[in-house]
Image 1: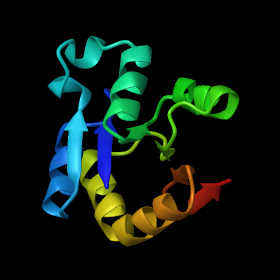
Image 2: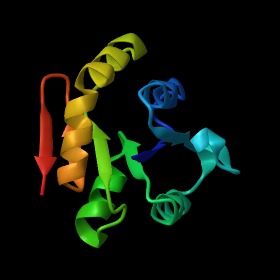
Image 3: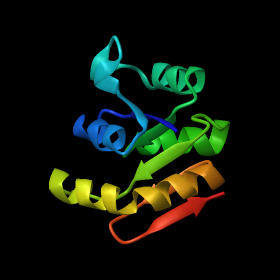
Image 4: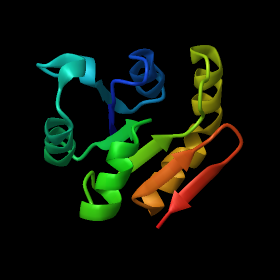
Length: 117
């Protein structure tokens, strides 16, 4: 499973995923870094079959209207520190992976994991 982590999330998010055995890329790793336009993020995700991980509602709307990105993980935790975010992601990673294998759009909150069709 391959991931593309959007700019609103810390680069260390990639480290957490890589340590768990996944291929993870951050927008900072792209040629334009965190200024990479959404359309290019979508293109990279499609070309490399990556799941976009974001907090950005623009990607949610794009997914719902156009089906792009093909697979999406929305981090809907509100304002959360990186330590708490890491604990949340690491603690729920098996469930996240299972949900992403079964669906195209998954949302993780502080207290829940929701699969959206």
